[in-house]
Length: 429
Image (cartoon, rainbow, N blue to C red; front, side, top):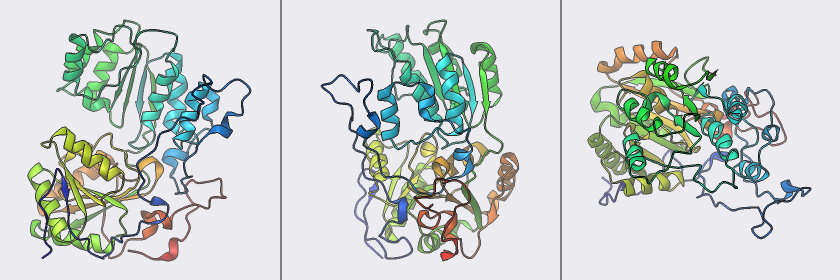
């Protein structure tokens, strides 16, 4: 057995076994380095002047040649320049590597800029954040000397506390955005959200975004939104690029099955979900004993340690992350191409958000579920609720379903959408 060093704040250290999880990173799905954010706008000149060829000043990231699904390519053909955005904002958009607006951004940005309330349904990982952040940043008026944007990462209760203490001054805030609105308007938070709204101006704009909208959202909309513009891009709930499989196992067989998956799959990065914090730590230790690099994260860890684990994982310092449902929402790590439900979730909503951690922004990914006899009815129920097909895992999995180098597009081919797959015949896992 390989020795395991004492875990430090979610980091297990162990010798990496030379198996299917190759030490070399694969194709264009390389783990990204920590982003270096620079400003291309000359600091002394007060910005780009009229008539400057501003696109020559851009410091563009390497082009992402991975194939994308119609979740993000089925657009009307609009460009970001079509929305008459500030030059500096446009430069920031392009330097982030965003080339053209996704469908949810096409639908949302012009309406949000007009000041109208929005109720938008779109899949996880299709550009919802950009759909509201771009118009929010565009509407900032640098001539006004009061706070216009608050960026607060907290629970609704903590935000309300900051407002009541006068730390967060929202009396002149014109826009309130609720991402993951289904969660924020659940029974646990809706009273707090309504209390927060009472501190905003009466003519504020409210933007709601989510993948699912239960009845609670409809009630809130009727009460607080003024003739909202409704966007629904949810013909189906699951992302087109995610292939879903299940494997029937006993509880005792799960670790062995996971070890087999590690040895056979070509994993760039994986997220592995458990249903309790105790099981997260136990599984992370076991994975390290098997010889694979592994971090873990859960809600009982101090926030400082959780932040460190998250950033280290996102920057590619480790291949596998074991976690609870703390990691199911709002996490965008493009290098993740495999999600494994070591413990199958209880609800369709949780399942949807878990598997949505792979296949981000139209890319391809794999979701594998380890199913015990106790999970079989829940598996059928979730399939029915999401109107999706979770197939039995085959003896070998076609790499073109989830490995970047097997489904990259030709850089000279402008059409990076569905189809365009190359090297599909190069083998299976």
